[in-house]
Length: 196
Image 1: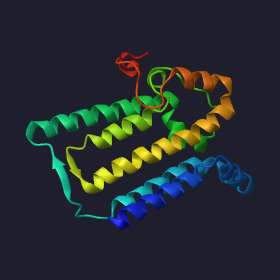
Image 2: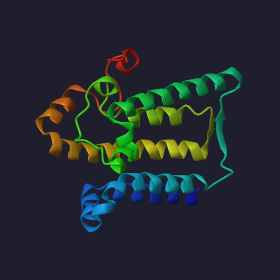
Image 3: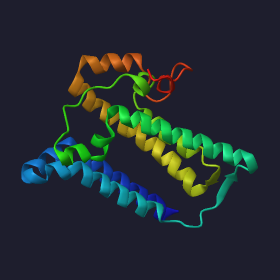
Image 4: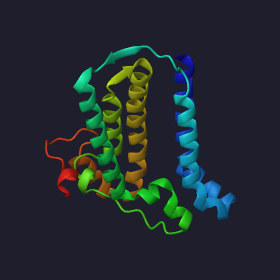
């Protein structure tokens, strides 16, 4: 267990440091031609370190198992959440998120997205990811720790990200913060299902 938690911390530390805008700018200054590869390299490093973290602690104890049809329902709900995650990611640009538009040199100026998923919560990708993790019908202690760790990491990351967004968008983002909750929707309707 200690090895798994230590690896999660290494992943989180690397992911956070590499996401720093100042580091990205400096890397772009030092290696101007390689700047467009930064986001893609960032994602590859994150993927490799996350896989490395998950490869630890193979025989974690089982906390609970959802039996029979219940497990199929959980898996189906997880599938719905994957579709919602993809839909929300598409709103801000999957190519930008993956680093493909930067690689092609077609990355445009960033716009503040406040419609669709982002009209209900300011961080839908984080919210949906935590619910996806929590709905695993075979809950091992390892998976439970990953879920709790992810939730804490997302809260900390969202707060840091919001400081950057306030600096970038000013009063527009402050108004958005006042009107839209951070993680949990205030109303029952879900605009990403209706296409708003």
